Each structure stands twice: as structure tokens, then as C-alpha cells.
Image (cartoon, rainbow, N blue to C red; front, side, top):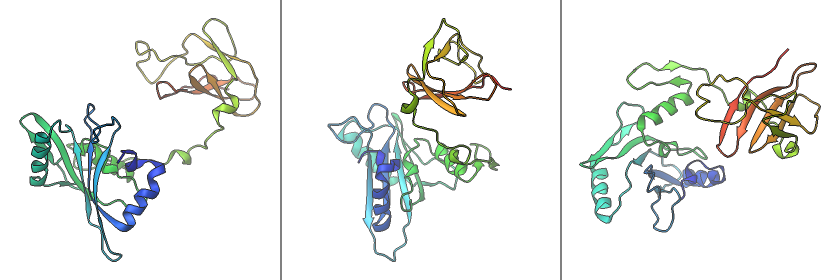
Amino acid sequence: MPIALTTGEAWSKTRALISRRYHLETVIASHDSEYPNFSENTSLSEILFIARRTNAKEKHGNTIYINLWRNPRSIHEALDLAARIVASKPVDISETGSGTISAERGKLAEIVSMSAPIEEENWTGALFAQTELLRAYKGLEKGLLRIPGILKPQNIPLCRLDELADIGPDYARVKEGFDVSLTDWSAYPGFWKHNSEIVRTIQQKKIAGSFLARIRLAGQITEHICGNGLAVFWLFPDCEPTLIGFWRSDLMSLSLVARGGR
């Protein structure tokens, strides 16, 4: 199955169906960048899973996740890996260790056991090649920061993004609000381009260039398409407009900046 089954919103009903009628016993995911698939005629990332039909009163046990570091290249490697998996004992996510499966050619996989997902829950055990990263993620879900080598976790306050802010309007509504100029002056200075030779820290100053407004919009928050990105402005009354964020659609990166103020 495609790896989207593990977390995809469109696959949530499928995960719920499996949770209600089956015990998800084993999930195998390939984290091998050269071979993320198991099917012969695709290059898409895939998973293998074993689910056993259960009756209504049966309680589900744990799910074993096998995260491959190296996807077998031949039938002989596959048979060897299968024998090593059968002979290995998965480490519990609540314990320490990584359940490493190794061979002469290096690490082949890590195997971990955790409670079976309920209803539409994501199959998070298949998302991390390293068990320690999975363990850190599970801790963050509970507001705990777990650092490898340190036994006592640290409390860290977290919340959902939608508890901090509302989702703004669709960018298409104002996509032609600005043009970008590297020579002309405007009242909308901003952070522009992401040159890795220049951008090396989180704190940044204005990079040469400005946003030329074609449409002056009233209101508090407005979003504008600028080249290959989405610029987000906060328009303060009687104040210089402030560019607070820029989304690069081509690089899938988000920059948060502050400009202007009372």
C-alpha cells in the first residue's frame, strides 16, 4: 500500500476500518532513499502490513513496526532479512534501545513495538527510521522532551497551531496584489530570496528589494502572491506596513520576519 495510508487524511477512514475489524500486527516501511518501494513497477514510497481479523470482544495487542534502513535488492537479501527479523525481539517504545537488526554490510533495520493505533490515528511507528526519533516524537505528544542519554524527560509547553491563530483567506483571492522589484522603492520593504550563502541565521534584516502594491487593501491581515511565494502582511493603522511572513512554494519553506511597528 502507498505510505500515505499511515498518515494521509484521505486514508483516515481506511485506518479506522482496519482498527475496528483487525489487529494491526506488523507494519514494514522502507526508509531506503534509493528503494522506498516494494512493488516492482513503481517508485512511490510504500509499506507492507499484516492485519489479523478479530472478533468484537478481542483486545488488540501491540503493533510491531519494522523500519528498513536498507531495502533488499534481491531474493537472497530478502530471505536473509526475513530470517533476521524473525530472530529479533522488538524493543518497546516505552523502554530504551533501538532494536537494531544488522548484518556484515551494516544496519538493515530497527524494530519497535508500540500500542496499536485506534480508529483514525496515524501509524506513527512507520514514520521514523530511528527509534530514538520516534520515542522523542511520542514524548512531545505528551508535552515531554526526551533527549537520548538523559533519563528524565523535560516538560515543554506545546499547543496546536490553530490554538494560536486562525487560518487566513485563500491566497488566490489576493494573488495579484504585489509585484516584486529589486530597484524601485515602495512602502512595503520585505525579506526576499533565500540565498543559502546569505541566509544563515533565523534573525534577518531586509534584503534589497521591495514589494510594489498594485492594490491597496483595507483590513488587518492581508496575503499577497509575490513571484513564487506568498507574502503575509499586517497593516497597522497609521504605521508602516509590516511583512510578517513569506512562504516559498517552490522550496516548501516558511520565513517569519518582523518589519515596521508603532
